[in-house]
Image (tube, rainbow, N blue to C red):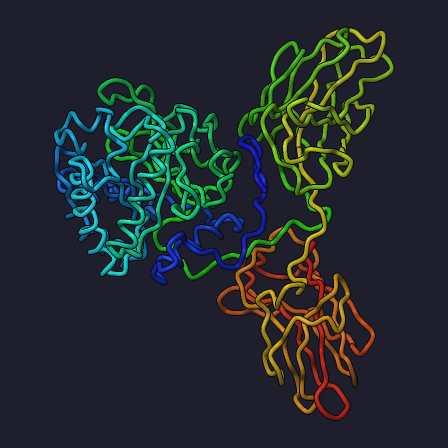
Length: 638
């Protein structure tokens, strides 16, 4: 699902394996791409911290990276180098450091402020190239000079490939802006140049260690208009130099492209000559990622006066529970997505840091994030209203996809003061489509004690195109004076979901001590039309059907699975194993036979639920001759 900026929501579960754009990508490169895709499934350690280290052969150095380590106690998980920038030079002497960094467990990214093929001097970098369409024409002088530049870049990337270093390669960045010779070109022509460059470096030069990063400027529009297509990109991101990270635009537009998302450059806004207007609190960046941009896989802070240690908040940025630093980059450890089960609230807004994009309409003052009342956490959204006016709104106007949910909830209240007459009422509402069609959950009388509003989404059309979400407060006849209204804990309720249903395969489940490998079968099902079946030998004391995978079950209450045995008798246990020590937790043995049974495991007693390594069913000795079948189906968590 795609959720708009302003709402912190759990992403949809990721597929077990996601492939890079290059079918011949190296195994290490595939691992990085798949790992980045799965990061947003985690409760913590889900966004890689990065630091740009300079221009190769000119300013590149780990001095500022060491400064970051000295100030915060942690190295960034990713380091960046630029192969270009200075006149007609293309340099990749930073490779030696990048190889060492990768060997030490870090990720690397390479950008390239390449020379203007028609003006190979310093000024040409910032002069729009009028012959941009000739870059793909190897018979033109422009095309020949461009491919000579690519040859030089390929030499550096080949050195990293030979050392088995995956590279997040970010060429022709900020193409939607007006800074560089490749900027503000015809979008279709730009896409053609990108695809030609991709094919040249990947197929002709044989570079299979690249993950291609498409990164427009968040300060300009048409951010996805230059996109070359999913077959030519692996990561999408934004370059952002802003005063307020929470105000960044373009996140939803990029996330909708279906690739891992990153903030490929971040830093404070600067004026002429690169002077910083106001020091940036980098702690605001991790706050914004947590509350507004939760699909972010990594960020890279720029160096020099833009770096975190030259501003403020570096410690909060690097030491936040979401931040991945060097030593925590483990590309083989993927966390599988757990779809939100029935009744599990997915937070949309909690107002803990600010108003999170919510505004007021027909209010006297506000709204503000305040500490004087909250339904959950320490803050809520407040506005002052005139009770003599018929209505007031607290709302968020922005695109939102709610198609994955069945209901919305919010907790609201009024202040004690003011003449409420027979009582103020509140409605939770959404507006959808270009026509802004209105749907609400009905009026509920509210007061200082608070009330929970609920809006059933099952009857609403255009849930993929919600344009506004909010609460309408209505005064009673005869009400007067000034009062305050509050909203908190805005959440979406997810529909039923399963960890495994076996409708199209084994869903990654395998067998241990079984007579045959498990298969998806139509012989029996507790839900849908298929289940998982394996043959077991009754003479064997036990057999297992299980799935080895990293799962985060934080906040889940119950794990369940339907099981049966085709013949004979025996018992079954539903279990999980957690952490690297594979600590075992089970629900106890339950008799099983031809009649289906549902096994449940109370997760409240499971240690380290954020680090589940295995889930499965243990079948113990059964009576009866010959082989028999055991079945598992409908593995769910709620």
